[in-house]
Length: 170
Ligand SMILES: CC(C)(COP(=O)(O)OP(=O)(O)OC[C@H]1O[C@@H](n2cnc3c(N)ncnc32)[C@H](O)[C@@H]1OP(=O)(O)O)[C@@H](O)C(=O)NCCC(=O)NCCS
Image (tube, rainbow, N blue to C red; front, side):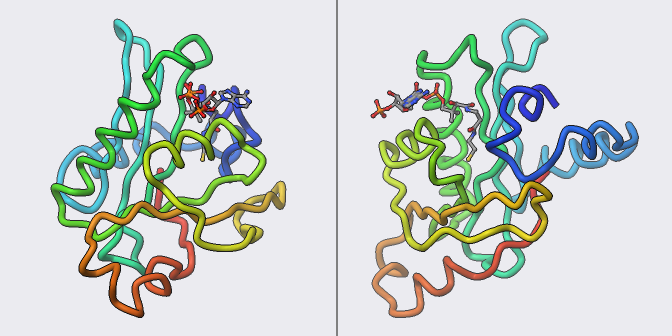
């Protein structure tokens, strides 16, 4: 909710909707995202205060990939390398669960996000698309980090990476 309050233009979820979730829902998602190879959320904390996060999950229409979402660093920690640390741990987790690539969608004029993803090896792989689940009607571009070079050489690789987005983060 801190991320949504700080950067509503970066995400498709809204602060109003997330604030309305009951505690049991938060607990269920925390439990789901803390174990297994389908879904992981990493938090960056200073003391007990969450200062950053990233979510990585298995998209049901592209299960051999992992999808990076909900990337956020508190303004006080921007430009410190905190975002690099979060991205590194997310990608490392994707490698350990044998994902063949990590995909994500980003608002194209979100320069800081696009630049850090490019610095970590992500490439733009498609045109801007609007997200029907985004009440603000923002557009997003797909980016991909290839993890498995043999799979990447297959002619179907890009189409598999571009399998439609589904609402599975959180
Ligand atoms: C995206 C985010 C995690 C990046 O963290 P960060 O600490 O700002 O990252 P960095 O300091 O490594 O900056 C990344 C790049 O953007 C540049 N940059 C930073 N702020 C910028 C700004 N306001 N305008 C333009 N470029 C900017 C940096 O110079 C750096 O470029 P470089 O790689 O060429 O050196 C952070 O900005 C954030 O939480 N933003 C709000 C939420 C968000 O947009 N999440 C992404 C959703 S897809």
